Image 1 (cartoon, rainbow, N blue to C red):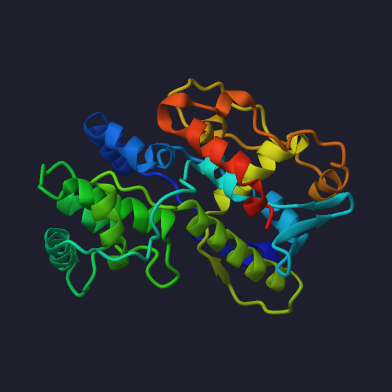
Image 2: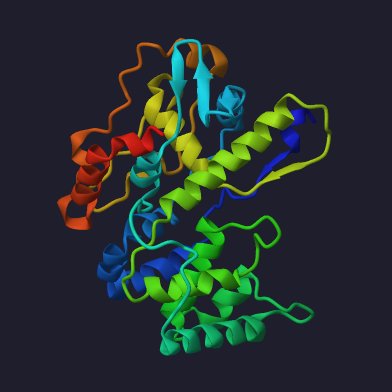
Length: 305
C-alpha cells in the first residue's frame, strides 16, 4: 500500500439509511425552524453521498500554504472561503458563537436531561452514547427531546467532529442543539472552515514528511472536494440537475470524476478559469441566501483576510 493509503479522512461522513430516514421523518415538522436557524441546507445536505476522490484532495493539499491559508498555484493564490462553505455546505456565516453558554434555567435543565440520556443510551461498558445507540434511544419515539437529540447527533457527526470522540455524542454539542431547536442561528461556517484549514496543514506536513504512521483527519474534506469541482471544471463530473428546494450539494450526489489524469497539471493550467463567482441562481430569497450574500458582498474584505 502506498503512502496515500495511510490517510484516513474520518470527518468525511457518509449518510446511513437510518440517518436519512430520521431526517425525512422530522423534516415536515421542523423544516421552517431549520430555515430560521440557518441549518436547513446543511441538515438536508447530510443525506447526500459525496464519493471520495483522494487524488483531488492530495493534489491541492500539496499546494497548501499554512502561513497564508491559501493554495499556491503558478498563476496565483486561491483558497476555500466562508462563502464557499456557506454555498456548498449550507452553513451559516452569521449568528451566535458556538461557545456561548446557556443562560436560562429552563435550557440548562434540558441540557442536564440530555447529559443523563447520553449515559442511559450508552452501551454496556461505555459512559457516553455512540451515534448508533443515540439513534436507537431517540429515533421515532416522539420523546419530548427528540428534536434536540437529532440536532445533537447532527452536530456531533457532521459539524463538530472530534479527534477523540468521532463516533460518540459530544456533550458540548448539547447547548448549541438546544438553542438551534428554538430557532437561534449560529455561525457554523467559521467552525467548519477552521477545521479544514487545520487539517490541510497537517496533511501538507505529512505529504512532505517521512512518517509512516496513519494520519487521521477529522475535517469535512468533502467540502474541499466540492470546492475543487465547483472551481475547476476540468476536474469535475457532469453535475446532477437539481430543483430549487434541494441544496447545492445535491449536484454532486453519488458522482465521481472518471479518468482524472494528472491533477497537478490540471491545477497548474487553470489560469484562465472563470469559475470563481457563484451563479446568480444560488440567490434563494426564501431561505435567507439573499440577505447573507448581500452581507458578504458588503463585507468581502473579511473573506479576503
